[in-house]
Figure 1 (cartoon, rainbow, N blue to C red):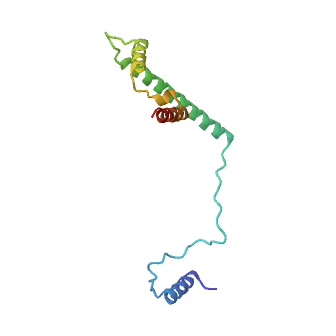
Figure 2: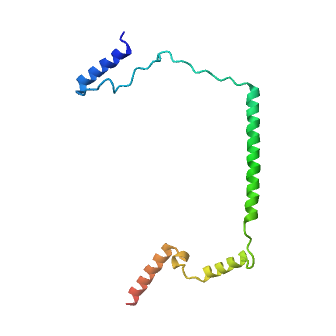
Length: 134
């Protein structure tokens, strides 16, 4: 069997023969030190149930503290907001004005009320009537 360094050198020679490109050994990374056929298993961290429950309790407490802080911050923001003094606009009144404007505007077209088929029928009837009168 060839050691790692021999394998790398043989590969570089074959590569040079096939492609004609010379690759120096310094560019190729060193051979791995670990046996790739027998990888080491990682150690498992065995947690006791007591540690897990303590961590969960700590996390719950942190979440509760954050919620309290957020609630307090929300209250402070509401207190700082300026309240409008003087003129107050009634929403219903402004809606009524808007609805009146929409009703009186002539932006609607005939096609909204009459279908395209009816419009075509009407045009053909008008054309037919004109031909008859001429």
